[in-house]
Length: 474
Image (cartoon, rainbow, N blue to C red; front, side, top):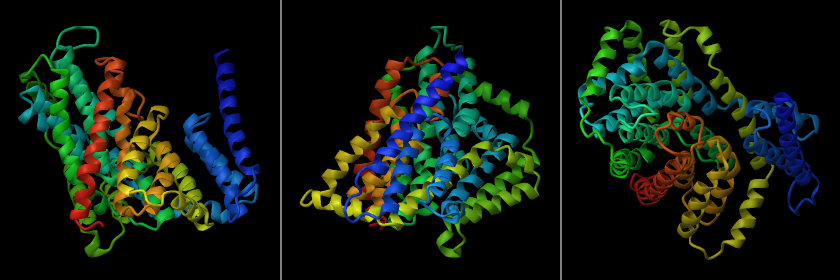
């Protein structure tokens, strides 16, 4: 019975996606629009609907869409598969392999425990330590779920146990809630700061290039986001400390727990030391990209090659990184469709149409309004990537036509697709893990999440954009 209900639900959701595509396909094509572009738009929008409703996994939806492009003669076979040569996608795939190295060697845990053993003497310090630990790991873990769920959450959960907290106990319950929510915020804020901190960042960067001809490098993203990102990293734990008001102000148990964990881990292994060297070398090469001119993706592939050669990970580990290959499939297909929408002139048509209706309106006012809509639209979404595919290109086009600086706007909308994750307990893939610890009620999560998301909008607009102008981005 349960299987039948599941099949019925899948059929209904699939039917909705198909109907959406058919409606667009058969409605009259606007004057000045290429029929091929219009039919591509129909399949593209139907695919985005599939991302949101998820009758199947997004990888499966993408494969079906790619097949439809060729079957219905919208694109040629070679054109439909061209997206797999995109270097930013391969950057993210390689970064997933770095994440495997951090987990397999235990280096991610060691970094966090070392920081806790030295600085985890108070509840506020613990929050900052977890933020710093996540910040250090984030450049090489483009999956919030892998980083937050696989490294940060287990450590925070151990800290909660060390102070005697449990979901069904009143003992230090608010302290555990503070640790959980502040650590979750750290994961999302780190995702904002690094291009390789979340796969949806790479999607935004790729769309920026394919739709608007704007290249965003790893260094560009980092320079643009580091100052507002650090401000948010400092401000958020303080704010949560005031709101949640943890019972424990001092937590010597945390330091002792971290020391015990480090003792069990033993001395740093040769694999961890080698990974540290590879990690620092890759960061250096990314930061100096404008000097040596090596593409960021190939720096990441160089790091992956070094990890394989040093036996930090093996080829089976690479094959087992399902998240990486999933990203390669759906992002390669979706970004390619977006690229052809631009090549076939649909984005230009849209820009001219919208531009005519915005004549005389300040792009700053438009940015404020669209940023609010862009973020709070996530109440109806559970995927950052679906959020970007649905809204990023459209909203950015409106602002660029209105005269906004392209690079700054594209990075802002890329970042805000992470910031909206705070809103709900299903905001992105990692959110249910922290919410599922059962230290914060759904109502309280939504209230605090709304506040943090709002603060993100304010900081990214009032500090982020001026900072980007100061460093010469526009």
